[in-house]
Structures are given as C-alpha cells and as structure tokens.
Image 1: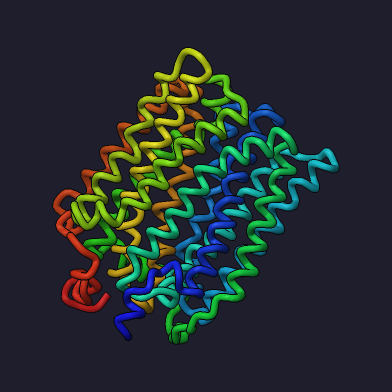
Image 2: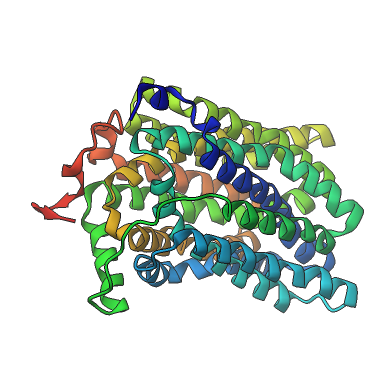
Length: 426
C-alpha cells in the first residue's frame, strides 16, 4: 500500500464516497419518519401516552430477532445485496401509509405493522453492514470512516427535523413519508454502484440455533464486548423511556407545533454534528475509553432539564434545543470510538452474529423502555419520567469501571489478542 493511498482523505475515495452519499440521503429521510409516525398517532389518531409508547416499541421490537438474523447473515456471501434488499423493503412498507391516507383508512394497527416491518428491514441492514464495512475501508480508517458516517447522521438531525416539520405541516404526516421511501430507493441505487470484494464464508456446520447461541456466548464472555453491551443497553433502556414521550411532551406539555418542534430539535442536533467532527480529536486527546465514558454521561444526563422548560414559546424551544444539543454531542463521543473499538475486536467470521447478539439485547431493550416510559408518563407524569430517564442512563457509565475499555487509548493497540477468550480464539 503506497504512502499516497494512506494520506488520501477517505471522503475522496470513490467507493466510500458513493456509499456515504446513499447513507446520507437515507438518514435525512429517516428524520421525516421519526417525526411523522408519532405525529400521526398523537394528532391524527389522538393516541394516549401508553399507545405512543407501544408504537415506539414496535419500531424496535424486531431487534429481538437480530441474534437469529445475524447468525443467518454470517453465512451469506453477498452482504451488499442484503443491504439493498433491506432498503427496498423499507421503501415499500412506508409507501403504504400515504396510500392509506389518500383512501382515508389510516389506523393505529397499520402504524404498528409499518413500524414492525420497517424495523425488520433495519435489523437485516444492521446485521449485514459490519462485514460490508470492513470490506469497504481499511482497519486504520475505522475511526475516520465512523466519524464521517456519524457526521452525516448528525447533520441529518440538524436539517432533517426542521424540514420534516415543515413537510408535515404542508403535506400532512402520511404524505411526507413518501420522501423517506424515495430516500431508501436512492440509497439502494447508490449501493448497487459500490463494488466491494465479498469475503469468503464457510458453509454452516451447525444449526441456526447453535450458531446464535455461540454468538451470544462470545459477546457475554468477551471482556470488551461484555462491558460495552452492559453500558449501552442500560443507556438505551433509560433513553427510550424518555424518547417514547419526547414528541408527546413537546406537543402537549410545551404546547409546540410540528414546525417549532422540528426547528428546536434541528438546532439542537448541531451538537451531534459538532461531536462527530470533534470525536476523533477528543479521542486522541483523552483516549478511546475515557471518551466513551464521557459520551455515555453526556448522552443521558440532559433529559433531566426538560421539565424546566417554561415561559414564552422561544424559551421552551430553547430548552428543548439545548437538551438535544448536549445529548447529541454526547452520543457522538460515545458512538464513534465505541463503534471503531467493537469493529476492531470482533473476529471476521462471526461479525454478523455478534452484531445480531449485541442488537438483540441492546436494541431489544428499547421497546421495553419505550413501553415503560409510556406507562410511567401516565402514572408519575411526563416531566418526572424524563428525570428518571436521565439519572438511570447516566449511571450506565459504572459498567465501564474496571473494564479494559476504560484503559484503551488507541484502536491500533487492539491487536489479535483482543479476540481471544479464556486463552482460545473467539
């Protein structure tokens, strides 16, 4: 490999840039769905807090199947094709809502079914992605690539909610979903242009259930993966207690419309863009482990400030935006180095099943948190529930104490010995 190739910025490499563009388009579309689905439930169908919580849970419930999907994906040679199938599936599912709207037959049942099927497409995508990713970029580019991909995601949270709010007000929420469906189709078209070398896979020599069990055991026994799983699962549980009620809180408690909510969230999301840009620099200064720990706290703690939002509309919007800013900054400090670390310590042959096992627990806990958030909002009030979420999520950092993650300074120091468990290869 030449020195020139090493020095070439990743964003100038054609294959990566093509995938990056498709991912960015899809992320912007996702911001519309993220706002439109709960808005349909809250404003059109007049859903209660527990019902909104159940809808949020439906989005993430398919992740419970990630362990089995990942174990199946591991033995599929063409991971890029699976990514394309996942994009097309989600596009078709989302298009059903505007069609139902035009026919005047939108129901809560359909919202839940759309959430479940779109979530299933997301599970397929996220389990196939890691093997595609390591074929797309080199090991020394992991942090840079994750930083660029995360910056696009953060940028989508800056402009996306404001655009989504405007589209929802002008077109109505169901019709605005057409934009997200189109974004998935564009992502699929760009993925077809990304040529990567398919890595050889071994034919399965055990049952799907046995392979799924092995993936779960690897995660549970691996010192890096176990600690990171405990930390992020706790964060996801408590953050979804709050996330399930965020749109309801902003709409009913703060009295904000779709445009105001989208604008506040969009301005606040600049924290994520800033975090993605600075994550590499902060990681080099503090070390991988410490940066992850700082991000874990900053991601969760700001929700405690939401009940303080009071006064004129501008003040309420400012508090909502500030909470989003700090939280979004924190999640980038958590995600960028942690994703790079997990990629580095996971053996090639089991990437998808490891991601599947990880997602089954980490994402599978999200619907539980969302349902609990809906009922807590009904029982103790939405504001108090936000405080509970902030405290519980912040305490997740305790799982990193004493783990090798906290002692890790660079990704490069994570050599092959990190993929061994109890003296044997993982």
